[in-house]
Image 1: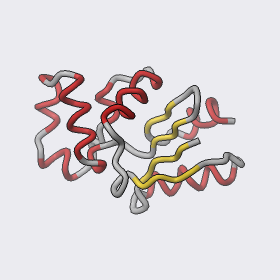
Image 2 (image 1 turned 120 degrees about the vertical axis):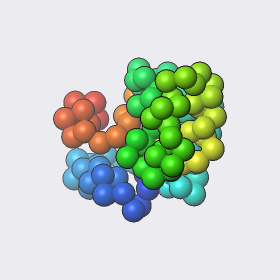
Image 3 (image 1 turned 135 degrees about the vertical axis):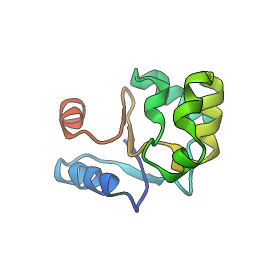
Image 4 (image 1 turned 90 degrees about the horizontal axis):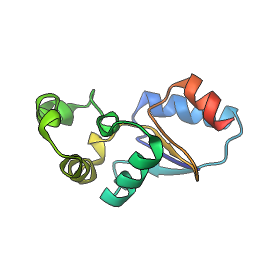
Amino acid sequence: MLFICYSGCSTCQKAERWLKENGVDYDVRDIKSDNPTESELRKWHADSGLPLKRFFNTSGILYRELGLKNRLPNMSDDEMLALLAADGMLVKRPIAVSDDRVLVGFKENEWNELLK
């Protein structure tokens, strides 16, 4: 499994602790230094079954600075994907990517259900 996170994020730290406690094998990728590409995001979006807006870090400083709360409803999927690929700090984290599922954000009950 690929675990995409930001080391300064307490939610990512909590998710990584969960992965270790539950014996899940994973590789770590830092979202700030190795931002997901547009093609990766497109695939993960399709595999996740989630609305694309769920991939945005809505509590992030950059999200607020760019006024995305008001801009996203008028953007196409292609525009949103390009924006997400431009800066990893816009992307919700952590992201867990396995062969057949993608989890965005850390909700312990979802991770328990899908990863154990």
